[in-house]
Length: 117
Length: 112
Image (cartoon, rainbow over all chains, first blue to last red; front, side):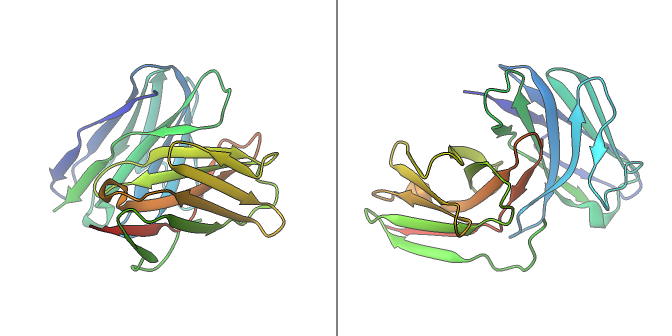
């Protein structure tokens, strides 16, 4: 099946630093990747949609200058949380949609737990 | 949209019994629906999907039912096992729209 990986799986950083999270589709090419954040006991909130080779589309209320997204290839997208603050602490999850587009199924990565001190 | 509240609806089920998880979706134009399972500290795992031209689809131990009239989706798990303990999310997608909208989630606790 389609496998999506994320790195790192968890990160602890000091307030004011930047953190980069990688999302890779391991056995398929993903023209579209998505970034979500999830708070405890809550559902997934879509942050942005990332298309290979073009700018990401951000959801309303998500600061594009704070959450930088790069989709450099068909298998890699990165999310950089710039000048992180404690309120950015969350579980960040990426997903990827297969290029064939036979279905609209999104396959999710294992998530990255970010803790900002 | 984003769910609110800190308490997920919880279904407690005896091991071996059947589980039914319900979901009300919001967009009558949605034509593709997916159930995901999320274990603690992990990303969502695809379980089963269904398109709007169907009202029932079966997988291994799971069945999804779709009632478009009342915009209702359900997931049935047969012979529930301890490994089925997780949070289950339904998601809807509208054709031509990249984005998935997730429901609020239902916690399933399997009692051995």
